[in-house]
Image (cartoon, rainbow, N blue to C red; front, side):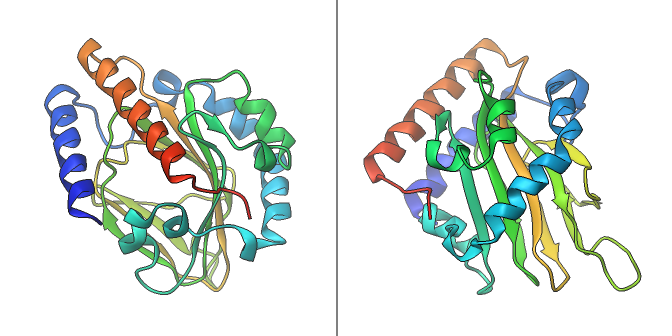
Length: 230
């Protein structure tokens, strides 16, 4: 990543660390109760993700969208592709139109900042890293989990040193500013729905800082003119 990005990320993270003290994995009912609506629809969401997967080579890789993420997306020559339906509050209408279930679930939900299908290639390893911004939380809904020959979960998400093995339809709400990494130790693509949701119960100064950060990111997106469609 660029020196400027790294410096800005570390400065923002230190401010949040000083003001917000919550664990790596959070209670869904308290911090994102709408998660239950997504879990109830997980099979319909998965069907939409499968349709996207039919043309997976047209879905951009993470580092195609954000070159700063090349060290975790392009590290091993295996793809991590992102089908983005909302990015920091900006809907990608062309992509959402292909996923009516997802579109109905995130409509009129400004607390859902980003919405993505994540496609993790066979054998892909996302090395340990930390997100930059504690003003949002990551909701992770597993849509298709590859299995080992003995039936065990083949893709493991490790957060703050603890492994999480999610099966199809399982979900997790967590703070991605804690160190985390992922392995897909299988010959199949792992698919998950990822949401970035606005963190509730923030101190007032952190709420203001969060809105500033999101505003800056939106300006950067418009300036760079990144395309999220295949």
